[in-house]
Amino acid sequence: MADLGDIITSKVRVKILNLFFSDLSEMYHVRGVVREVSEEINAVRRELERFEKAGILKKEPRGNRIYYFVRRDYPLFGDLISVISKSSGLGKVLIDSRNKIGKVNYIYFSGKFVRGKPRKNDSEVDILVVGEIVLPELAALVRAEESKIGREINYTVMGRDELDFRKKRRDPFLQGILLGSRVMIIGDEEELVG
Image (cartoon, rainbow, N blue to C red; front, side, top):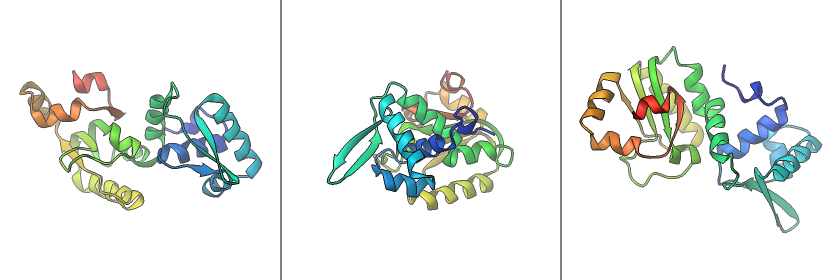
């Protein structure tokens, strides 16, 4: 369905983008990238150099190794995060399982969740799901992702009527969710916030 390989023809490039954008705080040396993506070292080197030249990655020598990491000042940084969030990890799973989890109007990931930043408190929401949702199906998908990433995912589910009611009432809980940075996985952001 939604796959980064649809728009990027190099499978090595896709694997490297997914690797770096799945954990933005991580730095990798060339052999570490080779191990993670299971590709030839020359192909990995070529793609890392291409990403560094384009400004997506930055390299830094440490000892006898050169480490690469994501440049957050890259002009398309936010766009890449959005695309990769939809084409890998939990975003891809939710899009692919859309029919199993019910009639979905919107799925939204908070900016902190996508960037792997910790929540300030337990009341912050990582994921908002709106629609007629089959809760056991959604819960199973979220639990599987929690075990993969090693941390709890705080998600909220509400029906479309409840969303509209809370928006009209300017509900503080919903306002806190909608005023934060976000990546829309399913649905139109303008429609959700408006």
